[in-house]
Structure formats: C-alpha cells, structure tokens
Length: 210
Image 1 (cartoon, rainbow, N blue to C red):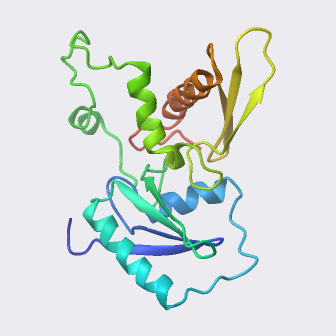
Image 2: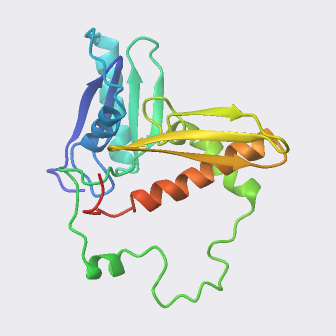
C-alpha cells in the first residue's frame, strides 16, 4: 500500500474500530456508515481509553496493515474483547467509492467473460461452505458489525425455518432458510441473505443504490 494510506480509528458506542482511512477493499467510513444506517450509533456516554487500551489499539493498527485491508478490528473498551471482521465496501461510500464503467467491470470480473461455467468454479459442498461462515461468523451475523443484524426461528408446518434481517442504506430486507435441521436452515438463510445482499449491493460501486 502507499505510504499515504493511513490506518485510522473511530469510536462507535463502547467500541473502537480500527481500519484503513481509505482502501480499495473498503474503509473506516464504510463501517461507520453501515452502522449509522442501522440506527445503532448511540453516543450517550463517552468511554475513555486507558494506557493498556491505547497500546492494544496500536497493535491492532499493525494487524490491519498486515492484512492489507481485508480485515478490520473492533475493540470493546468494556470487555477488552477484540473482534476481527471482514471488510466489506459500503455502496456509494464517499471516501473509497469508484465510478463504475464497462471497462472497469471487465477488468475486475470475478468470472472471466469467456468462461463457460463448466469448470466447477461454483461447486462446493454445503459442509465446505458453512465452514467459511463458522470461521467468520461475526462478519456475517453481529448486531452492530455484521452484514446481517439478527435472526429468528419461525414456525413452520414441515421443516425448520430461520429468518435473517438486514438493513442496507434506506432499505430493509429479510432472507429465509428451510432445511431438514435448524443448522441447515440457519446457513441456508445466510446463503440467501448474501444472494439478496449482492443483488442490492454488487461488489463494485453502483450509482442506483440507496
């Protein structure tokens, strides 16, 4: 990264968030804006960081640099708990947003435009898939920092039904999963939630959102 790239901090409730001030993968403003749109920023009290907290924050800045922007950290001033989270760019971020063009989309395509989709690129077993979620669960489901805010178990006549609830900008939507077990239903709901999330907010900047 450029020497001009700075790792910054921002106070959110009892947390101190540590992330890049500006980065192609997402920045601290992406995190702040997502939480603000959820209506979850409540600065009723100001939590002061002590010497140990400040030392920990400096260590987390180094961790962010080593991760090259793929992760950011939330440090809880009350419990001293550290949460490692996947950085996800917020749509229309005024700091790290990019103008979307046909050329840009072709250069950054996840699947090459000449791929015939017959190479097994999208094939992965359900058990393999949920291992990714289990490893990074706070990034997907967390009341403040997660892509999804909360979930609930609903009544169903046959198979278990799990619902997820999401806020993205001014939009609110839900996702549902139904499988033979509650575990299967839960992770199926996450998969549907990600599908809907990327339908509303593609991984590149989109001018029609929010």
